[in-house]
Length: 183
Image (cartoon, rainbow, N blue to C red; front, side):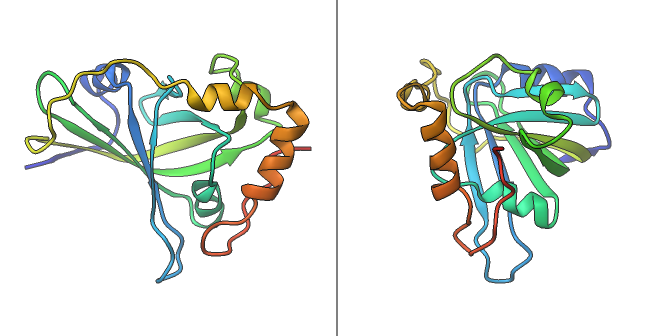
């Protein structure tokens, strides 16, 4: 049986900091809209305090979460133990997107190491924390982070990345507009 908490406790924070992978889920208000679920890695997650977290969003094939957060702010983040004791931890949040066009940009992006292909930063205010057993999650060994996304972004100029975001990340699968990420 899962337990619900109002804030991140010390053991939650320690668990999150050990995970090389997390999942991001969002959805539009449209009843037939696509639910988006994305895995994230590359050390892109930070704990700001016991009610606030942030993650770095790199340029990729879609930008669904940004549109969903702009529309309704609903965001769920999930962490799973793939080694050691079984555990699943979910953060139910209200999220928002910070882009280069925001006065918060420098502070938000400053939480992370410089990486090629940075698209935006997501900041999430935790409404509740849920833990559950994770007994059904397989045991797996972490080898290393993949480097394909980093190499792809490094192969592009800043202009090419901006053009990619404007041409490939501006509209969701459901036809929703995403917030502009670049000047």
